[in-house]
Image (cartoon, rainbow, N blue to C red; front, side):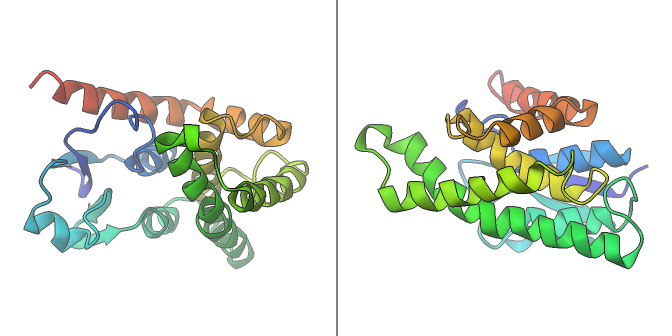
Length: 212
């Protein structure tokens, strides 16, 4: 019997399905071959128990025995420490994965997320030039970084799960057209069996709620 439970929403609208961030954790668990359960928390009404685990009323959070962890980066580090399939065991390897995991969430997603929100919500209004330039600068740097190898820190790791998922959303919204190396990286990552299963499982989880 597994001690790991991943909690996500019970339902979300169709537009964000396949991009809710529990996908990153599902992906990591599948890559590591770890057994886990999936639990649901209400999307429409955030309850006290939800806030006790995730103070910003977001998802996901992970419970591992008596331990409860929120924020995808923290969860990915926790899982990486348990599996060499997700993070090397040597100090230099761990440091490289950690810095690129933080880079995905801080340097790249900090630029891509506001751009993505505006692309989703107000595409007709256009996106401020400064924001486009901010994202373009980050993507240009990633083109250079990704030209040197298949993955960010040597072998595939939690850093690639985070970075590929960040870039995947940009690609969905048409933002990778001028960045072929980033496109190839996302394609390589999302062709992995663990991603395919994690994505299908998330889609099925939310689709099942449509019929309840």
